[in-house]
Image (cartoon, rainbow, N blue to C red; front, side):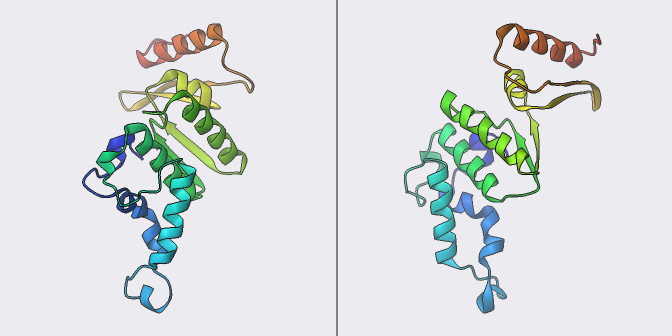
Length: 176
């Protein structure tokens, strides 16, 4: 999942961007064997994703007519709807306002509590600190180290500064 506009095809409608995954499930029954999709199923699925993403019910609108944050919410809702055992996200908080970022953190925690794994790639250290149980730093194609985070709140500015400093040292290859 790319960030915002990079996670969608701007020339296509939001509907077409959302069904990128759902088309496999919508090809059912006799007509599904010929690759034809169940339009009613897709419309229900798209409606549910758009409601989850808190978007206006305009799936035929061009993706380029939505803000980056709206597209990011749509892409995240689409991925969560897959209910996969492993969810891989790149820069999931990109373009999201504060309340949407807080909601994302709760959704990711609930997802993981449901026995599924979440792998997040991000350049936003504060996002990683807020989301992760463990942070691994990749440097020059190798892991330069990692940090296991203790459970509990991570909104203490001194803790965030300390963890950010440790992550920064790992990013430049300094240890300790």
